[in-house]
Length: 309
Image 1: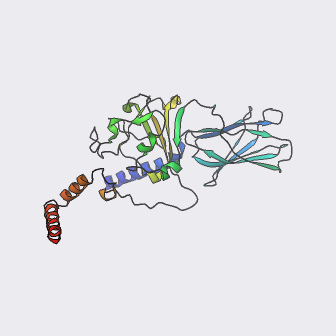
Image 2 (image 1 turned 90 degrees about the horizontal axis):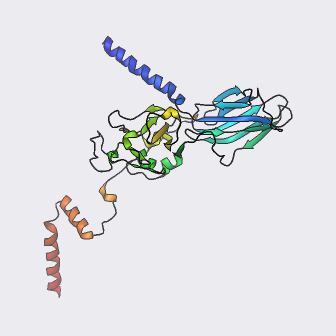
Image 3 (image 1 turned 90 degrees about the vertical axis):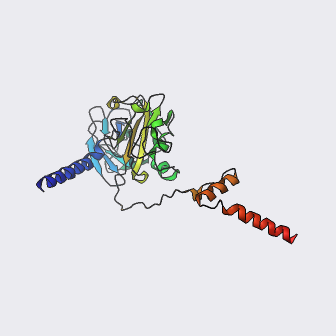
């Protein structure tokens, strides 16, 4: 009994540890530089970052070079405020940050009092100059609204340029490598690299098996916030593999209680009719043991028609 309790305590503590560090495992970041109207750097300015969905706040001051950085943040909408004595307070809202994005938000302060606030609505897409990674983010809108055969993220991952299924993905009924759930594993080929060279992470934790380097068990589509497929020139921190790098971000929750209810139904009754109706009829009859009856009925109907004539 004591050994069982110890094991249960170990599992519970491990789960709590995973939950506590889940938000600390990705490199999503908001950064920028604060200057004045003349272009001079503004050190010591107070910068406040607010996550709109939860109201979470993070504070820091600009460095001697006028720079600030908020690394290891969740995806979603943010608001950044900069305040400095002798300057008007500036606030930028509607800043959408995607997974593994280094969103640069620069500020140019004007002379005034700190009680004056200038609000700016973020718009447009800034040129990415802080990293050279090549990849594509599949945001939540496409995850939720695009029809998926099998509800697997692998179907969406191939939307990225240069990415295709690996044969071990299991697109056939039986797959090719004996996975425990045929057709559910995810293994991708990117720009000619082998599928075994891929890496897939869930909130920064490697989620592939050590044998074939495939993601065997995939999370529910409804639990995924978004994911990013990187195919080249990504950061050295992901140097374990040289193939496709898939980073999946799970939903972290908001201040509102919500959930998902769905029914995933697959059967042959909703399939489109085959080009050969006779083949469809024979297949249906074979499945329901109706083949011996069909010719008899047809002959009987024809004989009655001839009698009427």
